Image (cartoon, rainbow, N blue to C red):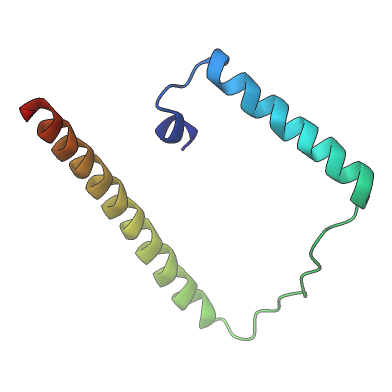
Length: 86
């Protein structure tokens, strides 16, 4: 995903991102401590039928991701064609 945002995936462009993430983690851990920022309640599975819905949700999310990527590249091709016409 980072190569889509940056357009280039090399050590030169990736190193500042890693350094910024490390510095941000060190600073936040020094001020907030090592505990979680958000406390989440424990989740319990009430019925095995829930698994069917989670499976369907996973398939739907996967199909949505594939469609998003296809639309993204089609729009990119379209804009490239529009720029070449100018």
